[in-house]
Image (cartoon, rainbow, N blue to C red):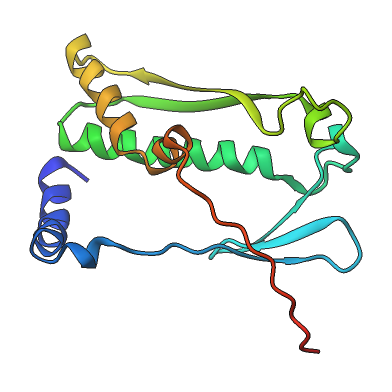
Length: 172
């Protein structure tokens, strides 16, 4: 896909959202079901069923997906798609590109054995390695716009309010 094709696809969508801002507000959903036998959660991905479980550092077998890894994978996926879309829109030719994310966790926090240890990532590092002949100022713009428009990155960075609830389901 080139810049013209991307603009052609996005132009009517952008026009619709400009004229009707409410149409741009969409609620994404994720659903999962707790496993009856194991400490695991079966997450519906839209394409397949992903089974998440405990990380080996907390007693897991390593056979299930770690939700922390899944968060980093979502960041890599979103950042990669955003980088590619921005590069396409700006007509920055990328011969190849890779995206990496790594995060530091202190599992003492999630295991509840050290109150001073945080639960969650203490730091996340996202990096892009690109092969291109584009000048540095174009690459600086590419990075800036990728950060600006990456949904997962912005969500982690801005820490939106999260509402948590627990409901009793007595249906059998």
